[in-house]
Length: 481
Image (cartoon, rainbow, N blue to C red; front, side):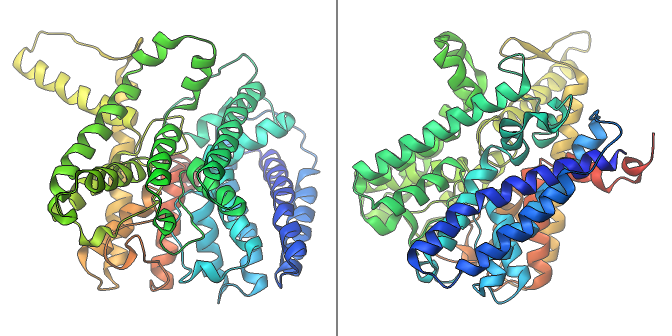
């Protein structure tokens, strides 16, 4: 393990994190807010640590897979540790663990909160809180590569490690240019979202914050009732469409810009994504009709919004899901597993894995019926070999195992099953909302320290898609070559 190159990467990320804290400092200064010193101290500590690590001299600058996986896993933990400083130093949170929970939830785009009254928080804290969603949405290391391509050679390993099991590939020959293209698309779509929110009547600050939550699919809101606070049917439909768009693979937008529409329309994951949202919306629409006095407009709007919010793991809400029928709640739980498309900012397992697993089951059934038959699993123009299927199966088993362990730990709290299970699933799928105590209008403040630590680990494992964290815990990872 080349620890020096890992430390240099961590230093680069910390330096840029300190830079990204400055807008919150400016907001605090403009508002003459009590937390301005907290942001200044946090920036100095984070920036100084980053520069110190960044300037470490490494004899060998090559980046192997083990360094990439270690860098990714450690970076996400370290940026959370330093990102929690403004909450803790300002006294907004009662203890550092709560500050860390809020930050991990932000960077992993989970959107779970320990704040009981977000509307009482200063604007600078609200901005930093939602900005972490936006930063974490596309991936911290991808962001760093876009700004600092000199972070290391063969940095394709960083991108692969941050999106483990699903190779993102290159849109253009140079990886740093690929990162810039992805962030240009991401930033442009975010700005368009801000403009759209302004057009439909949101105040400027509200529009920016909710654009971060929509783009990062994290769903932090500055209102206790989330998007439902604005009581605007038009806003709710527009937000649903925007959430749906951020659940699409960003590479497809680049392909679309290159005017290869047929390739986009042929994309199997995209077509499955659209079909899943439509079918789930129709089923829930029918199920909740009596709840909304058989109002087709209200039932369809609520069904479409919540299906989109859950499938994209954004977690915005316009309804109290605790009052919904059990069928609708159960279907939404299933959608929490899936997530949306790979290459998007969403959490969850990702639909491409679900498709491949389903096709592998069908292949096994076919081979049982016809032992001599040979069939291949194909996704678009690619053939998925047995190694690819096996890695996805390992991911699936690991995902379920982490979920199971999280449920067991949370069950020590003696909350009802829906609260316990949805909190665990919400953590690993990076959704941030569930049922019971953590319903759309609830929060995670009542959980014990042990449960919060467990959920934070689950959030990180879910966001990094299991493998980098498992690799980090392996003793062989740290052995010298």
